[in-house]
Length: 176
Image 1 (cartoon, rainbow, N blue to C red):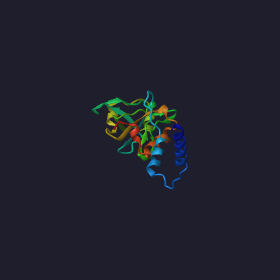
Image 2: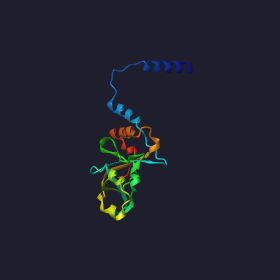
Image 3: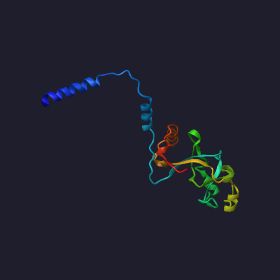
Image 4: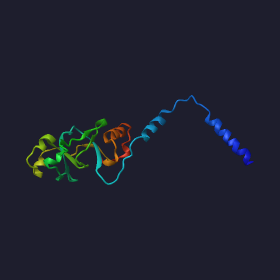
């Protein structure tokens, strides 16, 4: 009996694999396949990748961090902190209006009326009260995501843009 079944199974497999189809691939299958090529963020210790959208264009404005009740500053940069490797640490523009943070913001971010360029030329860090008076918007975020450890990306801007354009930001952790 086994001698009959094995050749029959082989013959069946050969005939099925030789069949051709004139059907076009289903579009959703193609999209699913493209999405498997997208980066899966790695959430390990290290520098976080934070992307966000704001209500208005604050791209060139200095970011500070407020307390949860937004009544006080919890963190703010020195003028030298807004420069990285000789360049202003402006956020990087991404697809669909998202920005890639380069300074270390979180959900409690607020933006000052002062630009990075002007702030970087200050002789000293303004007092907390002065900075509070410069806040343009204490609740500027529309969306914010933590997309893992920056060291896990090979081409961070390209990979983030691919996630955004594919509508796959659910692979990141939504913060707001």
